[in-house]
Length: 231
Length: 231
DNA sequence: CCTACCGATCGGTAGG
DNA sequence: CCTACCGATCGGTAGG
Image (cartoon, rainbow over all chains, first blue to last red; front, side, top):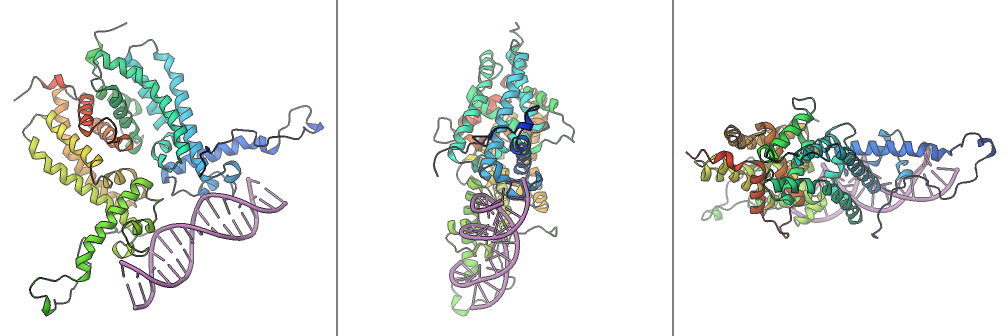
């Protein structure tokens, strides 16, 4: 298999569109494809994310996905060139959303002590993992082995971006003595603890996401070590 | 599907064996089935564990497993009634081995302070997860959704036994102040951090299993809180 | 995006 | 445990 990444078209599937007919002068009239493709593609992505999460990639058929999106069995292949490309698009979508949400939350704690910054990262991470529309990231976490190597490399770059958000915060906590483990291993162990929650968290049970945030912070950092350094 | 559990024969597949022939008087001669079944069954389990781990359950064919065990495509079904039963047997094997190893290691730290007991549990957990013959537990951790509900219930009982080994140790650490998070959530988060290591640990890289044990202990417990209570 | 379809593969079985 | 095989399903495509 060649090393090109299965690119996912975001719009304009047709390179050259015919000139708009005269009667479309008033309101720019879109073609059938343009009008519906965003919708249908998004519906496929959502359906695929939910099914890949609950059944796994290999156990999910493209027919399942088509039916969940209200299409016929062959139609997903109009939007995605293969089942693989659909999986990759789900994972990309998940990582882009997670990065966007963390970056949107960062300014709120930018001038706070590192412990509050960590709390923000942990809270957003749990929300992305366990909140509404939370099928995309779990699929990325648990179906990575179904990707080809080019796709894996592209996703690794996004994951590396994500880790970059954590490292300076953990380094500051390590320096202050609030985090005793080495920063690299601490990051891996902490994200593992958080990521594993998708296996057991049940919103119908006692603990809330806020309880999880509190427990994780209490488990990982030593509150006493940071009390001496305000500002 | 009826709710009976796919039981896995551990030996004596034949209820009544014919009396041993006279020439077998000196050394008790086993039948062909008795002589080879343990071997072949164990070979299938090992091959299945390795393939289920690297490719996932749904993406692994029974033909793959047969070939890896040196058999023809139909032969696994002589030892296991279905692909499902093979998966369940792999998971059972993994849990039994993990429980046995933890129980064998317990006496060494039974009279030590809780922090040393936790170190023992963490170390054995990492060894079971990352050491030799370590495909069984990862399969159990990451392929649970492919089980039917009866199998899931039976495995949950074993997992509950396993958690029972951790709870008193964590409770003692919580009481002493060395573990600040609530015991229940702390256990879930900690085991998540450990279990996630199968996703990233690479023995060819810098960190060793002992490094992981040190980092996990440093991350989870506050060394200073226990120094005051030697006994 | 649908209809109709193909080629390949897969879990499982009969009979020895 | 092997041989020979079946029925069902699946990813993907042509042609509109």
